Amino acid sequence: MSWDVSAVRRQFPFYANLEHPLHYLDSAATAQMHAAAFEAMGAHDIHARSNVLRGNHRLAEAATLAYEAARASVARFLNASAAEEIVFTSGCTAAINLVAGALAHSLQAGDEILVSLAEHHSNFLPWQRLRERGVLLRALPLDAVGCIDFSRLEVQLGNRCRLIALTHASNVTGALTSAADIAAVVAAARAVGARVLLDGAQRVQHGPVDVRQLGVDFYAFSGHKCFGPTGIGVLWGRREALAELPPFMTGGGMVGRVAIDESSWAEPPRRFEAGTPPIAQAVGLGAVLEWMLALPWERIRAHEEALLLRLLAGLMAIPGVALFGPANAADRLPVIALRLATHHSHDVCQVLDSRGVAVRGGHHCAQLLHRALGVEETVRASLALYSDADDVDALLAALHEAARVLA
Ligand code: PMP
Image (tube, rainbow, N blue to C red):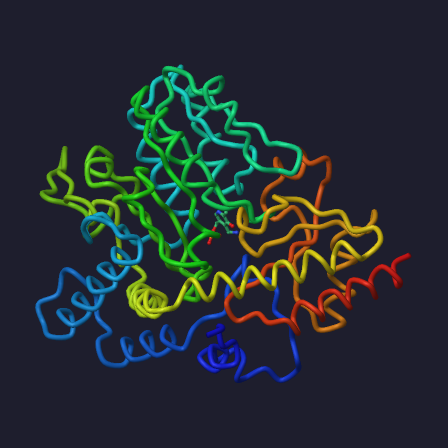
């Protein structure tokens, strides 16, 4: 049985309410939101809106139960050992900044952090800022198509490395970091006593993740990239990895005892959730992850891969198109960066938009990756489980048109 795109589109209010035909091929930036999230958030704010974790009445209790149920859904989605390993944040960027900011307290001048040149700025700049503390930032280089060159791991990993932060999938090339490469990174990190963080922002849209199998210490992602609400994200941390971190933000809800000179912190995850969290958004994310957990991912992957191959074949037939990323579809997500001759990506996007095709142009918050590929910016098209062959064909036709109009 093949994946039924029209059936899934009926579950996305975006598709039911489109006034003009639009081929949305920018799900890597923000995916459309599933009805389960709309419904769960609406119902929560009508029937159980209250603050969490510190109320003494029935609504506060209902809100707390819903919030903690959402945490349990995230734990299931990631196959975490316990719900206490899930910290809600405002997004993937906030989750990575939390680890960097909390870790900063124990870093010494001369300690090292290892990243790669493929990182989104959200998984690069928080680590670069640690240089203010004398921390040395090292980076794995990229190969000719923009994939992380893991053959350089041994050379780049110093004895004083405290953390390795890598993307699980590139937001530009779609390149997936393989389980074998992650295992090698984890083994190398263990040998020098470093932690490993994976940026899962792009990967989560394409199915549940098994953090225990990956063997890493931290995993970060955003709700809006996996069909959930904006304003909510997740940091998963292995129990012992979270336990050794001090708070990043302080405020209500994350303390034990407060005294004038000194205070004690709550245990994780509360230690990292200062202030009122995005409660309805967490509930919406929980609902959408439960929906995702029940999906037939093998069929969806086959569908996405078939579309990707159709797109790649069509792109290769357009004169002047240059492609980046792995040649093998199995090694990548359905995310494609391209250049159309020497045309600026914004000009290309404008022509595409006028033809009802929404893609993104620019450096996609990955300037280092682009520079390594010898370009400043690219056009990026990204497919999701609600994309179909019409979307791909419309993109190809619009690119032919752009090549003609911009020539
Ligand atoms: N990492 C990657 C790989 C991303 O694609 C993004 C979003 N473009 C982020 C991190 C940051 O996510 P957010 O803006 O939702 O915090």
